[in-house]
Image (cartoon, rainbow, N blue to C red; front, side, top):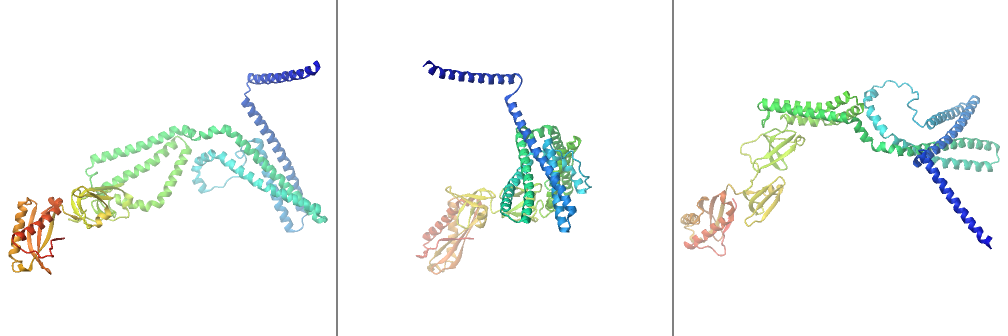
Length: 571
């Protein structure tokens, strides 16, 4: 009974002791590793390196076996070539021999690269390259291209390896299916000649399969090594640009300072010329001054390009020098197609082109005076108070003409009162290139696009204006309608204008017989007023109508009914 309970207890105790011993031993081993300076992460890296080494050795063994098979195949093909009778057969054997020899060279190269685990192309003997003028001319670009190639070497290499792996993976199933079909035919075949051909085909495709599988294994191993090295290369990849500027920072600073010195020197020359040469900064300069300005600008442009290149050459930084040359080649290629355009701009800058300073041109439906031409030219409309800065390139396709005395620039200016075709009358409170704003008496504001405003033919009242009001009298006054009535009505209106305080704004008032209407004899009142009274334009019209009716009432002139024809006429 005691043995029955004692035995499980002993087993449990023994298990606990074994677990404790195992834990203690592991702890001791870890402590020993730490004492000996072994880092667990480092140990994992060593295991990974050992695994990669074993895989490398396995791949090398596969390549050696493949080389032996290829050498045997080459020997066999050479024997067949010696015994071949027909020319087509010899040509076929030679093609196979060339293909096998190429594969052998490729496997030898791969064997060396995998064993060395580095790029051996640098130490392999290359054939002497014949002289090539074009290659020599562009040899200056090599440092920059090599720098960019080096920066992207791992990415490009991994991409190439992945493409190769995909290429082999797609062909292995096809080869296996072909070998399976050949084996199936071989088992079902009874003909000895066909069997020999099938065996020959099976042997050839088996070699091809072994070759492709070996290549696939090698490429996978290369890709695995590259991806494992990414752990150590990650930092250098991320800091590539940082390292680039750290190594070349002082050179870049010197180049930047050289550009600043060139600009300061050019600015100093302009200041000296402005202070010493009279008329150098005049509004309308002569061609000789413009030529000097062009020469300074061109020299500044060349020095800005050349100064950094000189710094790169002195510092012997061929990468930056090559990048500078590449940039200059790109600029030259761009300028090649833009030279005609720049020539037109040069003509404008010298004031000998189709657009010239002080002349008039049309832009956006508005006339402008060319105030001055520079890299950014200034146009102005003196009446509207508008000005705009225009790139000199925008003027290349335009034409200007000399100014004539009395030419209109704009229908109105700020503060003027205008009447538009749509009947709106108001004071101009805002003029811009895009829109016009006017305000009516009472405060209503109208806004028009510039093109719409000009299409409404605004009538400006601010200089002076004329009001014409017509009144019809009965044919009963036919005898006096062209004489005494005209004189009496004129005197009455003049007196009323003075009495009501309009004397200072009235320029002239006269009354004339207009015409014989169907049921009335029409008289017209023609009154001219100063522009200062444009804001009360409608009030003046109403006053004239009122004065006419009062005159008819006072002098007992009948106004025909219902033909009461009090209305206004436009001048």
